[in-house]
Image 1 (cartoon, protein in one colour):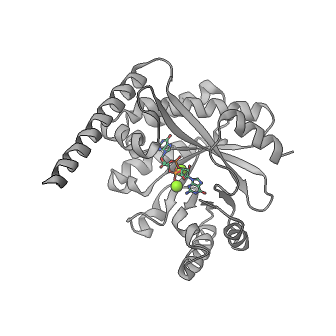
Image 2: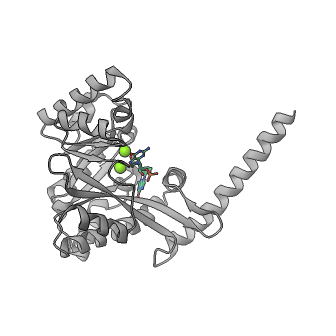
Image 3: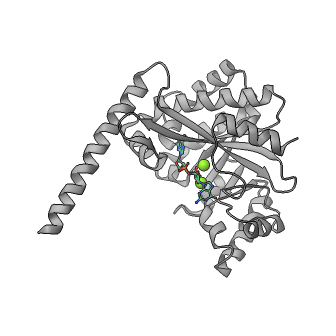
Length: 275
Ligand code: C2E
Ligand code: MG
Ligand code: MG
């Protein structure tokens, strides 16, 4: 009985929190600006040259009442309510403007942006992306969209067609969290994509689980046979980096290099690394 009481209390708090969050996210989606939206940028390094070649845009939400909220909490809520469509546009604008700024400063770097299936399937997604790229005046070949295998649970044919349209413009597409989805490898490889991002779980296992060494090595070679750019995420130490360099993995990202950074700090990091 006591357990139930606790459970109810927990549920109650959870529901309250979600209500507050959703309320503020609706406000954000309806506002002209993007107050409360925080986008941090995590450096991605070329494992051969140790130079920063890209950043991944990672969103956070600065709630007035709840403080800083993780994307693991608010992105699923945005997807469920389809608010990811208007708010995703704000994230896209913000990160493309920062990319433009970096390129203007003379840094030859790209920007990776996470895109949900709901966004891809929203009305005129490709057209709106093209419009935005033109408005900001950014080079499409410097943009990567990261999608997860969850897109396979949606309208696969339609999604593949939209990806094709975007790729035609020069934008590149990569499969995020590669190796953790449930879809068949065959279907993954049929998708219009240019790269794979090996899931952190495999990188984590490099030091501990001998199977992960074999698997990670094979994922890199498989990717290269298919002409994919192969990125490893979640590199936390030197040992993991050494393994990935030895396997010829193209790029790496993780706390070992840097955590996600504010625009200012990202610029500083870039300035120090790429001189
Ligand atoms: P993701 O796209 O796989 O992003 C990588 C996540 O791993 C980020 O978590 C990043 O901070 C974290 N990470 C990076 N290096 C390390 C490391 O060395 N060790 C560990 N333990 N973690 C590391 P974050 O920022 O909390 O984002 C979580 C997820 O939320 C992202 O996973 C992505 O799926 C989603 N997300 C974030 N921003 C957006 C967005 O703007 N749009 C969409 N649709 N999804 C987003
Ligand atoms: Mg990602
Ligand atoms: Mg990932």
